[in-house]
Length: 220
Image (cartoon, rainbow, N blue to C red; front, side):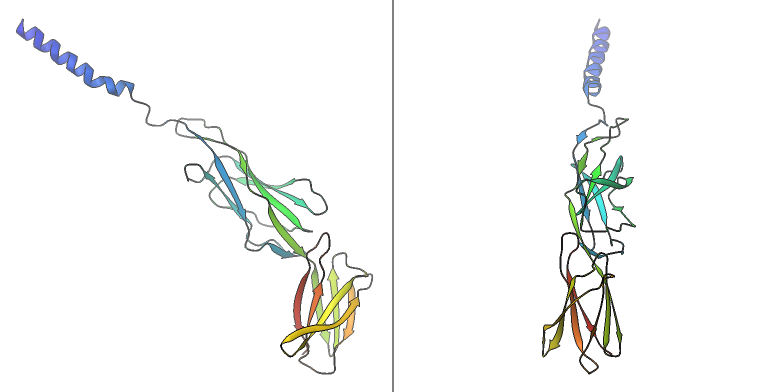
Protein backbone atom coordinates (compact mmCIF):
# COMPACT_ATOMS: atom_id res chain seq x y z
CA UNK A 1 0.00 0.00 0.00
CA UNK A 2 2.75 2.46 0.74
CA UNK A 3 4.36 1.87 -2.62
CA UNK A 4 1.08 2.43 -4.48
CA UNK A 5 0.38 5.76 -2.73
CA UNK A 6 3.93 7.00 -3.48
CA UNK A 7 3.61 6.31 -7.23
CA UNK A 8 0.18 7.97 -7.35
CA UNK A 9 1.59 11.05 -5.60
CA UNK A 10 4.49 11.36 -8.02
CA UNK A 11 2.15 11.02 -10.99
CA UNK A 12 -0.13 13.78 -9.70
CA UNK A 13 2.82 16.09 -9.09
CA UNK A 14 4.08 15.45 -12.60
CA UNK A 15 0.76 16.31 -14.15
CA UNK A 16 0.53 19.53 -12.18
CA UNK A 17 3.98 20.50 -13.39
CA UNK A 18 2.95 19.99 -17.02
CA UNK A 19 -0.30 21.95 -16.76
CA UNK A 20 1.24 25.45 -17.25
CA UNK A 21 3.01 24.28 -20.42
CA UNK A 22 -0.25 23.06 -21.90
CA UNK A 23 -2.00 26.43 -21.23
CA UNK A 24 0.86 28.71 -22.40
CA UNK A 25 0.26 30.97 -25.51
CA UNK A 26 2.03 30.07 -28.77
CA UNK A 27 5.53 31.50 -29.08
CA UNK A 28 4.58 33.23 -32.39
CA UNK A 29 1.22 34.96 -32.73
CA UNK A 30 -0.02 37.39 -35.40
CA UNK A 31 -0.50 40.99 -34.27
CA UNK A 32 -2.45 43.83 -35.88
CA UNK A 33 -0.04 46.74 -36.46
CA UNK A 34 -0.52 50.26 -37.74
CA UNK A 35 1.99 51.75 -40.17
CA UNK A 36 3.49 55.12 -41.05
CA UNK A 37 4.74 56.18 -44.49
CA UNK A 38 7.30 58.95 -44.88
CA UNK A 39 8.26 60.70 -48.14
CA UNK A 40 11.09 63.20 -48.67
CA UNK A 41 13.54 64.53 -51.27
CA UNK A 42 16.99 66.11 -51.25
CA UNK A 43 15.42 69.30 -52.62
CA UNK A 44 11.86 70.58 -52.90
CA UNK A 45 12.63 72.46 -56.13
CA UNK A 46 13.64 71.30 -59.60
CA UNK A 47 14.32 72.98 -62.94
CA UNK A 48 11.95 72.10 -65.76
CA UNK A 49 13.21 69.05 -67.66
CA UNK A 50 15.45 67.81 -64.83
CA UNK A 51 14.89 64.73 -62.69
CA UNK A 52 13.79 65.17 -59.11
CA UNK A 53 16.79 64.39 -56.93
CA UNK A 54 16.62 61.93 -54.03
CA UNK A 55 12.89 61.29 -53.78
CA UNK A 56 12.67 58.45 -51.27
CA UNK A 57 10.44 57.01 -48.60
CA UNK A 58 10.04 54.36 -45.91
CA UNK A 59 7.32 52.35 -44.19
CA UNK A 60 7.50 51.86 -40.40
CA UNK A 61 5.26 49.70 -38.23
CA UNK A 62 3.90 50.56 -34.78
CA UNK A 63 6.58 48.23 -33.40
CA UNK A 64 9.23 50.55 -34.80
CA UNK A 65 10.35 48.03 -37.40
CA UNK A 66 10.41 48.46 -41.17
CA UNK A 67 7.65 46.90 -43.27
CA UNK A 68 8.89 44.53 -45.98
CA UNK A 69 5.54 43.13 -47.06
CA UNK A 70 3.05 44.82 -49.37
CA UNK A 71 3.68 47.58 -51.91
CA UNK A 72 3.95 51.36 -52.01
CA UNK A 73 2.54 53.43 -54.86
CA UNK A 74 3.75 56.96 -55.58
CA UNK A 75 0.99 59.37 -56.63
CA UNK A 76 1.25 62.87 -58.09
CA UNK A 77 -1.07 65.83 -58.59
CA UNK A 78 -0.04 68.93 -60.53
CA UNK A 79 -1.08 72.58 -60.71
CA UNK A 80 -2.79 71.72 -64.03
CA UNK A 81 -4.62 68.64 -62.72
CA UNK A 82 -5.47 68.24 -59.04
CA UNK A 83 -6.43 64.57 -59.50
CA UNK A 84 -4.05 62.13 -57.82
CA UNK A 85 -2.50 59.90 -60.49
CA UNK A 86 -0.34 56.79 -59.83
CA UNK A 87 3.24 57.20 -61.03
CA UNK A 88 5.05 54.01 -60.00
CA UNK A 89 4.77 51.10 -57.55
CA UNK A 90 7.63 49.52 -55.57
CA UNK A 91 7.91 46.85 -52.83
CA UNK A 92 7.53 48.24 -49.31
CA UNK A 93 10.71 48.56 -47.25
CA UNK A 94 12.65 50.71 -44.82
CA UNK A 95 14.14 52.59 -47.78
CA UNK A 96 12.41 53.12 -51.13
CA UNK A 97 13.86 55.20 -53.95
CA UNK A 98 11.71 56.74 -56.67
CA UNK A 99 13.88 57.57 -59.68
CA UNK A 100 13.25 59.15 -63.09
CA UNK A 101 10.60 61.54 -61.76
CA UNK A 102 10.30 64.69 -63.91
CA UNK A 103 7.48 66.99 -62.79
CA UNK A 104 6.33 69.29 -65.60
CA UNK A 105 4.69 71.93 -63.39
CA UNK A 106 4.43 72.64 -59.65
CA UNK A 107 3.36 69.31 -58.18
CA UNK A 108 2.44 67.36 -55.07
CA UNK A 109 3.54 63.80 -54.34
CA UNK A 110 2.40 61.23 -51.80
CA UNK A 111 3.22 57.56 -51.12
CA UNK A 112 0.44 55.05 -50.34
CA UNK A 113 1.15 51.74 -48.59
CA UNK A 114 -1.15 48.86 -49.63
CA UNK A 115 -1.20 47.14 -46.24
CA UNK A 116 -0.58 43.43 -45.75
CA UNK A 117 -2.58 40.42 -44.46
CA UNK A 118 -0.48 37.85 -42.61
CA UNK A 119 -0.40 34.35 -44.11
CA UNK A 120 1.35 32.62 -41.17
CA UNK A 121 1.60 33.13 -37.41
CA UNK A 122 5.14 34.35 -37.97
CA UNK A 123 3.82 37.47 -39.75
CA UNK A 124 1.79 40.46 -38.62
CA UNK A 125 -1.20 42.18 -40.21
CA UNK A 126 -0.12 45.63 -41.44
CA UNK A 127 -2.69 48.40 -41.83
CA UNK A 128 -2.70 50.50 -45.01
CA UNK A 129 -1.47 54.10 -44.70
CA UNK A 130 -0.22 57.06 -46.73
CA UNK A 131 2.31 59.83 -46.34
CA UNK A 132 1.61 63.52 -46.02
CA UNK A 133 1.65 65.29 -49.43
CA UNK A 134 5.10 66.57 -50.42
CA UNK A 135 5.27 69.76 -52.55
CA UNK A 136 7.77 70.17 -55.40
CA UNK A 137 8.35 73.57 -56.97
CA UNK A 138 9.18 73.53 -60.69
CA UNK A 139 11.23 76.43 -62.03
CA UNK A 140 11.42 77.39 -65.69
CA UNK A 141 14.68 76.74 -67.50
CA UNK A 142 16.72 79.80 -68.45
CA UNK A 143 19.62 79.70 -70.89
CA UNK A 144 21.91 82.75 -70.99
CA UNK A 145 24.69 83.23 -73.54
CA UNK A 146 26.96 86.24 -73.78
CA UNK A 147 28.43 87.37 -77.11
CA UNK A 148 30.76 90.25 -76.34
CA UNK A 149 28.36 92.68 -74.65
CA UNK A 150 25.16 91.10 -75.92
CA UNK A 151 23.12 88.96 -73.53
CA UNK A 152 20.98 86.36 -75.27
CA UNK A 153 18.46 84.53 -73.15
CA UNK A 154 15.69 82.00 -73.60
CA UNK A 155 13.08 80.90 -71.06
CA UNK A 156 11.12 77.64 -71.37
CA UNK A 157 8.44 76.45 -71.27
CA UNK A 158 5.43 78.68 -72.04
CA UNK A 159 7.06 82.06 -71.63
CA UNK A 160 6.20 84.01 -74.77
CA UNK A 161 5.57 87.74 -74.51
CA UNK A 162 6.33 87.81 -70.80
CA UNK A 163 8.53 90.06 -68.69
CA UNK A 164 12.03 89.29 -67.45
CA UNK A 165 13.51 91.49 -64.71
CA UNK A 166 17.23 92.28 -64.95
CA UNK A 167 19.25 93.76 -62.10
CA UNK A 168 22.85 94.97 -62.20
CA UNK A 169 25.42 94.94 -59.42
CA UNK A 170 26.06 98.36 -57.98
CA UNK A 171 28.52 98.34 -55.11
CA UNK A 172 27.50 95.41 -52.90
CA UNK A 173 23.88 95.35 -54.02
CA UNK A 174 21.91 94.45 -57.11
CA UNK A 175 19.61 97.25 -58.29
CA UNK A 176 16.98 97.30 -61.02
CA UNK A 177 18.52 97.69 -64.44
CA UNK A 178 16.00 96.76 -67.11
CA UNK A 179 12.76 94.90 -67.74
CA UNK A 180 12.51 93.17 -71.09
CA UNK A 181 9.77 91.18 -72.76
CA UNK A 182 10.38 87.85 -74.46
CA UNK A 183 9.35 87.12 -78.05
CA UNK A 184 6.93 84.38 -79.11
CA UNK A 185 9.69 81.78 -78.57
CA UNK A 186 10.43 82.93 -75.02
CA UNK A 187 13.74 84.56 -76.07
CA UNK A 188 15.14 88.00 -75.23
CA UNK A 189 18.25 90.02 -76.12
CA UNK A 190 19.79 92.97 -74.34
CA UNK A 191 23.11 94.83 -74.46
CA UNK A 192 25.23 95.17 -71.33
CA UNK A 193 27.20 98.30 -70.46
CA UNK A 194 30.53 98.68 -72.27
CA UNK A 195 32.75 96.75 -69.92
CA UNK A 196 33.68 93.18 -69.10
CA UNK A 197 33.06 91.76 -65.65
CA UNK A 198 29.57 93.24 -65.66
CA UNK A 199 27.43 91.32 -63.16
CA UNK A 200 23.68 91.00 -63.42
CA UNK A 201 20.77 88.82 -62.31
CA UNK A 202 17.82 87.45 -64.20
CA UNK A 203 14.50 87.10 -62.36
CA UNK A 204 11.68 84.97 -63.70
CA UNK A 205 8.43 85.73 -61.84
CA UNK A 206 6.16 83.14 -60.26
CA UNK A 207 2.89 82.26 -61.96
CA UNK A 208 0.14 79.67 -61.51
CA UNK A 209 2.15 76.68 -62.76
CA UNK A 210 5.81 77.58 -62.18
CA UNK A 211 7.83 78.94 -59.29
CA UNK A 212 9.89 82.07 -59.92
CA UNK A 213 13.59 82.31 -59.27
CA UNK A 214 16.63 84.54 -59.63
CA UNK A 215 20.07 83.59 -60.95
CA UNK A 216 23.29 85.61 -61.31
CA UNK A 217 25.58 85.98 -64.35
CA UNK A 218 28.75 87.79 -65.42
CA UNK A 219 29.96 89.15 -68.77
CA UNK A 220 33.43 87.84 -69.69
